[in-house]
Length: 395
Ligand SMILES: *Cc1c(COP(=O)(O)O)cnc(C)c1O
Image (cartoon, rainbow, N blue to C red; front, side, top):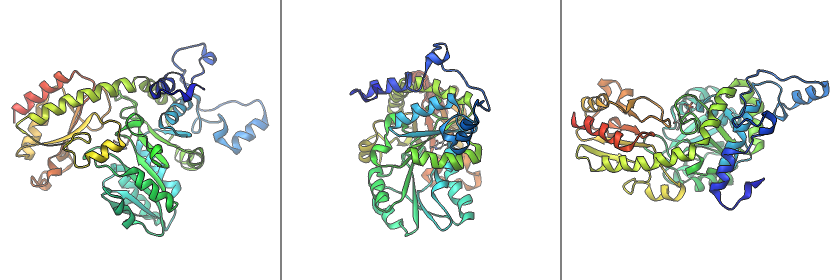
């Protein structure tokens, strides 16, 4: 396989354009077929028996493996530098299936504070019912993880950076600590994608990302990715993946293969545009604070630079005198930037934190209540800056 070429960018091109694709098996079509099938036929009882014994060894039923999904699995595993990969219907399912097999009653998890909503629900609402407890740490330093260790700690959950404050954890140190104690580590790498952060090179066991964001890239499908050793993926496949039935549908897998083709081009463009929008916001007299992990003013800038190859798309800012009225007015005055959750698509988005806070609970002295998150999409940066300018003029 031309997999060991010296130039990492040609590796990436190979992965995106060729790896996993057998065009001669489908009429040399450029785009792979969508194998829209629930099940697969057998000629021999012995072959069927083998498939029953190990469903991960071949095609039996599309709740398990599917040829279209397999193309995507191969590409995503290679992009992460992992042995294997499973693709889920969405990121939340990948998180759930990534945690569950590695904990049992009486076990303890250390998680970074304020992980993605549905990771937090898993730790706070579901797992306690089965006797699994979780300690949250800010996770800025390795000492916090050391202090939180218990004899029954079996799992460490990271999200670096997160998608609101971009707080990051010292990944390599946490991975080394976990190895020493036989603890499994999982990181949510959605913000960076494999292009900007390679968690396995830093010693992490399981890497999760939502494919709904950058990989899909067009706000038209959901997807979730788990990568790791074949042994870990098999453990997850044989239990959670098949049991919860959360595998991705072939058509959605096909959309993600399509999204991958342009991932590097989109990330490159978004990275450049984000810098321009960031510079514009930084000089605006009505803008107060700005959070962006690769800006020199970011509190963890040096660690971010060490472990991330890039940052793009998401930035969080506040406006001076950040009252609910002013924030609302700003967001509602935008004419092109849409107000919505999520990110990673073609379209730029705004999301005010105060939308998740009852007006009577809004505290203008709490900076986090004032956060406004901007996602910079694929539009012309000048177009976005003009929209921000006219909206900022109105407040
Ligand atoms: C969106 C998101 C998820 C969940 O992914 P879904 O595909 O929406 O289920 C997980 N982590 C992060 C950081 C996200 O932004």
